[in-house]
Figure 1: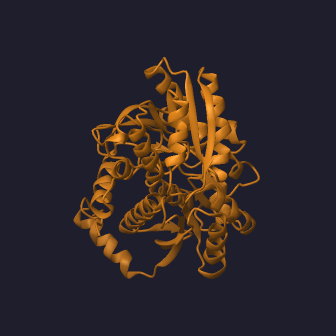
Figure 2: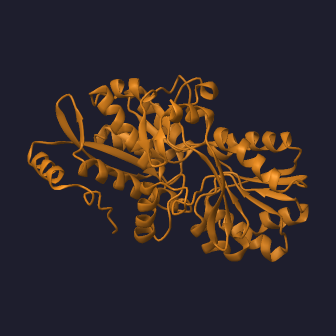
Figure 3: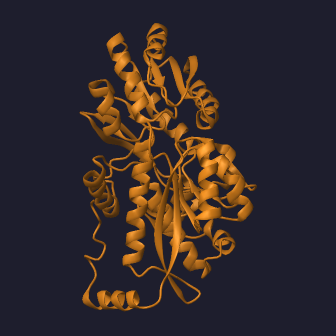
Length: 398
């Protein structure tokens, strides 16, 4: 497996220091990952696990994290939540009651996270998540922090950009997975399209794990909307529907609000994926990517066979935030780390970052990163535009 060589830029003196530290007594902090490692969304979970391992490797190579005079190394432990509430609850029990996980550095899925919060908030364990549901955030969940953009950061700039590119858009169909993530995203998507003058002809649901998408595609083709928004559906599901739509002759605007992996999408849809707009992807090999993102992206391609995206790289950023907060608090006590996490400033894979979102969630627990719009062009994710939220601009210019 590809391993990033974080030691490469270190000089002799720094390397000597690291070797001396390695010989000293060290302790380990276990960082948990709860994500789908099997099924249609496994591409997200496996990528998140890999990025977390790279972040831990970097922290450890740089001497670990120091708190109250002690040095700690990070160790990643992953759990398959199968994108279900049942497995999310089981993961939480195993992590916190059996395996002694200290912090949860990445989770995927609103339903699994809701189930986990019943235990993490009660025990006071910090939980980082990519969950798109607004219900997992707010003052009643002070130990929960979102590690990537959600619909409340993405949809308005994303949909506005698409409408600008296609000013004649009049009608749409929304296809959502029938789970907590889809249920919370659906009304926001419908209302946002409506505000742009786009009529929603239908808003339909499907169960995660579905393998037969021909009936859905047939209904879409019959309605013949100008646009189809695939909401929070994973790339493989969207690919299956697009393939069917292509056979049926539909050729409208394709929108993936949770669009991430172009490789996974095109592996199923082929040329039917061309032109699709993605709201949670990025070109981490392009000119706008940071050097950290370029190196991580190259490693992911070698190790996983596909690039990183907004979901998968988020565990790296969560771990960088966690390191900064532990050092700022000078403690590994979760309550003390939580107390400074919302105000700490750190270097994410995107550059300077921190947490905000209090105006939206009544609590500053949203990672501040750019909103990036990409489109599938010749089978690749091509960045079209990016914008920083106002809070991030203020942080950068402070």
